[in-house]
Amino acid sequence: MRACLALALGLMLALPAVAADYAALPGGSFTSVLPADGKAAAAQVAPFRLRTEPVTNAEFLAFVKTHPEWRRDRVAGILADQRYLSHWAGAETLGGEALPRQPVTRVSWFAAQAYCESEGARLPSWYEWEYAAAADATRRDARSDPAWRENLLAWYSRPSNAPLPDVGGAPNAYGVRDITQPVWEWVDDFNALLVASDSRDQNDPDVLKFCGAGAVSLQEKENYAVLMRIAMLSALKAADTTNNMGFRCAKPE
Amino acid sequence: MKRLLPLFAMLLLLGSAQAATPLPGDSVYNLKMQLTDQDGRQQTLAERRGRPQLVTMFYTSCQMVCPMIIDSLRLTRNALDPATRAQIDLLAVSFDPARDDVATLKNYAEKRKLDARIWTLARAEPAQVRQLSGVLGLQYRQLPDGEFNHSSELILLDADGRIAARTARIGKLDPEFVEAIRKLVAQPRG
View (tube, rainbow over the protein chains, first blue to last red):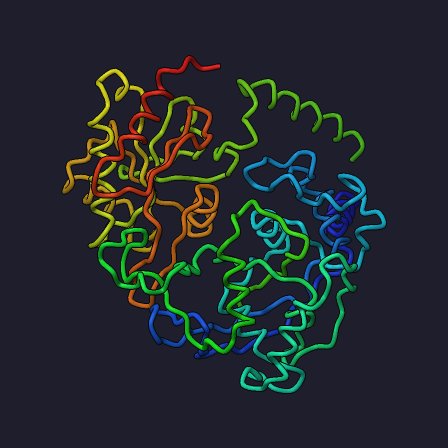
């Protein structure tokens, strides 16, 4: 009995202090800026759950303490670059540049993936992220509203050296917070977005860089704020970290 | 619990003492990944350590570029002198684990006359396939019709799993890439 109690206590200690909140999103057919077939097909998003807030410094610190292979002084260089968590005061200390409730940034795709796995989750796909980010405070798809676009673009006017606000902004129609601001977020298939540098290359059989139907073409060109995210994600390598790239996790329904 | 800690520490020490030399941080073998080959044999990616590898990613139902990827691997290997050729292994991992099961890989190897002593055609769980594409710097995307868009490259790993060279020239020989293999194999291991 005592052994059982100790075990239960140990298990509880191993879990994050407060389990992260996930919101249920219904999914469905969704017109993405990236057509599913590279031409015009809508994306199909299965019902899923999405973390309501990005992962914070405090949460990532708890993860690093229980998964020391992800300490910045131990991680393999091929899984996270030199700047990984470099704004933290130490390998297991946040310090003044990384406040507990700020979203964690300077994390690689591999590190983000490992964190989500520790939470029994995974990274969202691009379509899941884009679908969740299409909502505003009251509507599930506010993308045709210029105000929605301006909100997305407001990110660019924020000086990159300004401290990140804490997580916990206003929820959108799904109850998801901070999805378009203040950080950009990794998605599971970041290296699947395949934007050709020149869309005129499309379907040219002489261009053998990509097998199959050729590079994906972009739709909804007026949504350039979203397209810029795709351009950014496509330019990154899985070990890269940046000042403004954080993440949140997703789970199946 | 406190009594367990020294035990853990000891186990850790034992573990590290057994590993020959520590893996370089930039080795793709830092990725924990389980491969299953065309004969159903299981192997971790890190077990490939010890010999240089020519690595690519493909899928068997691909009609366009993938047959050329396999041809290019063969062409590259054949361009090496026999002594160099004997020092390297070939590894092709599928983008499409849902359809490329062991039997399909085996069938493909037989059809394309890929000798199992030289060629490893492998599958892995989908999440690990995505991770492998991450360490190798390859891109892929599944289309609604089941086909894939993907980058096509041959990658040379040194004996410790570091990327030593790569080529995106598919369908004809890349002499610079062949030269990179020759140089790597000629180097004494340090």
